[in-house]
Amino acid sequence: MFKKVFPLSTILSLRFLGLFLVLPVLSVYALELEGATPFLVGVIVGGYALTQAIFQVPFGTLSDKIGRKPTLLIGLIIFLIGSIISAFAVDIYTLMIGRFLQGAGAIGSVITAMISDLVEEEVRGKAMAIMGASIGISFAIAMGVGPVIGAHYGVDTLFIITAVLSILAMIILFTKVPTPPRIKHIYHAKSKTSDILKDSNLLNMIIINAMQKGLMTVAFVLIPIILTNEQYGFSWEKAELYKAYLPAMIFGLIAMGPAAVFGEKKNKPKEIFLLSIVLFIGSFLIMGLTTSDTVFIIGVVLFFVAFNMMEPLVQSMITKFAKVHQKGAALGMSNSVAYFATFIGGTLAGLFLDISDRESIGIVLAIIATVWLLWTLKLQNPTKYSHLYLQQEIVDLNKLESLEHEHIAEWYINETENLIVIKYVTKAINEDDLKAQIAK
Image 1 (cartoon, rainbow, N blue to C red):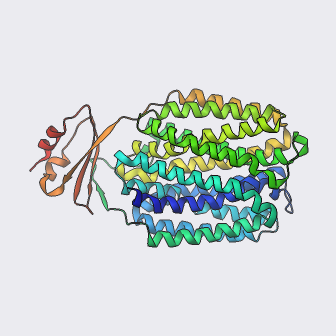
Image 2 (cartoon, helix red, strand yellow):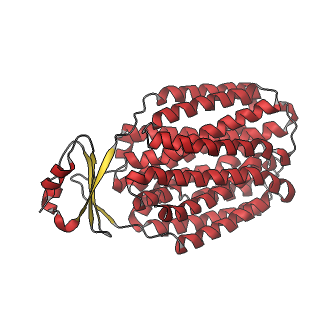
Image 3 (cartoon, rainbow, N blue to C red):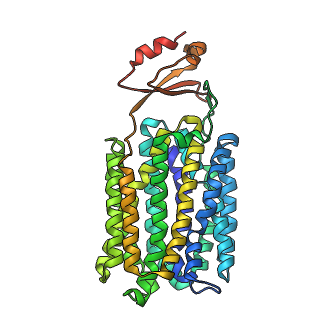
């Protein structure tokens, strides 16, 4: 499992490393560009997410049709072009174009779908945890070195590093990533992408994913500006920002493991999500109201602990709720909404800085998170399924096609490995009885 997941996780983490190298310092540096305002800076920080929102569904659906690898290559090339444009931007609007192009390479949902193709659902939670941990490591590296490199060599250097990382990701794609199996899925009724929104479980996960990512961008706009601007009660140098980000990411990584284990193995993701939201509420209240550097750092730590506790579970839950032929589309739709929320979060954060004070911003964000907490109380933990794997030659396909049971979620054919795969509720169906119903 690890050999299948690690190359894809590396590609995704390299892409995130490039994106997040600039985030800790982008808002304070963008303010110095020609034509910059706090509102436009917010657009810049969240700008990549707008095009991510637009292209997540097309990329996810395209990967279902033409294959994951070709779709990944297209996305990485677009990301590379955007990084180069951003590196040479001399005004706020050129940087905005570069950031929009970075986001247009919307491959996150494709990679997650490809992992779910390659890994059995029984161990998919571990696979998603590996992916989440690799992203978390990228966060930690970015939080530690991004402010230092940015302070000494400029944000343009960070964007050049991002371009180099995207080239490295392309090399890994064609040298280390295995080709996923061909899956043939047969259903009595044609399924539509719009059906995803009718599934209450998937809809709840879409909202959770959107709120998590949107609040992340809000934090990345506010934290560096608040800490480096004397009017907010702090006067840090830009090169000192790592003092807040590095401990936050270290504690975030520590929290990620237990959260993933409890959420996956104990099948209690809802409880993890609720705890994380409570931490989000506390973090925004602290960052909005405190006048102490140390206490503010504690608020930053709480924020990233909450974010990282959610990260390995969100994508995994979506792939568990989605049917096999809709994984790419479901992940694409979820990430599209999440990235749109990311753009809105960055834009509103910049707008808030224009029209409001730090205390009011912290209180408003805590109220928004409280509403989110109340909504999430409706979430249900996923049903535990088992998978029956049978060689195709011992199965009567006519009997299989007529197989109907309320506790059978789906079945499909893995043509590459010549397997019939049936997903069913363990406690409701006896495996031997199921085999007898479809045997030749």
